[in-house]
Length: 322
Image (cartoon, rainbow, N blue to C red; front, top):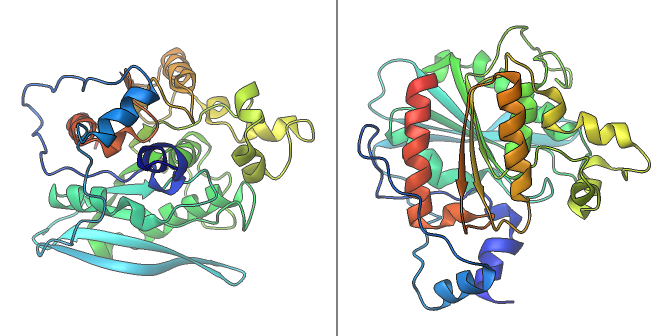
């Protein structure tokens, strides 16, 4: 298997490895959309010839960032679910919190996949958190969603300890992580809590979705093995389950603003999913921004240029809504 396919299309655990040292400040001239590729063949050639610069996925922890790793936020049977927290050592007052939810087709991935982004945004003055959740090989839907919601409540309950402003929370996810972020934000606060305490009216302030699946009832999604494994049943066995597990069916006018990034040659989550999400949010009156990047694949954020582009618009989005 060639290197490009391994990086861009096979390893779902790499969905959200984002990092750049060439960050642009909000207020500068907006970056142009990075030029994409005609198809996967051209993309493979660019990587093979060294024409595509990829990000550093395992950065060292800077001296000015402090971390708390492996905190148990929930125990389910014999499983300890953990989260990591990052914060700038110079932080003196409460700051917004960005909660990152890793991808991996609901079956793989780990919370440390987000380390590059966690560091970047801690250096920008946010408190950043990354969470683990039960994967589909351990428990089916809604287990992962329940875990994410429990993690959100844990963060709110421990806000004082980490200088977190619990009323300024954003969720960021990639692929399966984006699906869980949308589900956690679009569903009622007291639904899918898994027994964790939930406070009615406690909405997150913003969502960032990187190539997240939004409708599991499409023919394409119904036939994906990852979706069947996540839900535990086929569409024929439980069609209503596929609707309940789809963010699109939970969208309402009071949902938080949503920032969407999607590549047009995504071979795993079709661009039509993001196109439809944009339309559904518009119809519901939910503020949203959609960046449709022509000629980029599922893990387009591995490109330094794409990453810089995305961070520019994330910075502006957080500045506006957090």
